[in-house]
Image: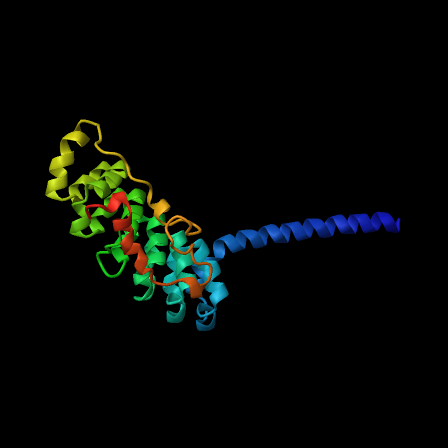
Length: 231
């Protein structure tokens, strides 16, 4: 009898635990928008708490403390979930090439929030227009006059032609209207940022805040690749 009671009690306890775990999981998925907005100043400055929030909703970065909006790890987590959260980062991090690159990979239009504006990095510009062709509007005029970059943008959204230079529109207009394309597509932007840096000498994606830094080498990529020949 005692063995039977133990089994019943064990089954009941297990069912209760499962119910509570399911409720906790549902709450965890829904808590950030309300929890971070209404959190105390101490919690808004709690790195783990804020990272958990922005991992689900990048825009919640706006409710983080100023110190965490200047924390590379926290901001990188936010822009990977919502590239437009770049606008909420501290000004120095809006100039950080790794963070800008992560942001435009998620949403090409995040390029408009990069600093200095407009961003002149070839690799970042390619990543942005590959994700959203209309991001072509936010690159420098010199890059809007680059046929290769415009082709990238048009491949994603033909409406991007309106942001190309007059010269490029003249060169490509007939081909686009005819449903054809000219030239060979260059390698995707992701190849310019290899995960281990083996192909281009760049470090891999930063895994800690200390590894996140401005990468001057990025602006040299154009001269090292055929894609950036006339930028």
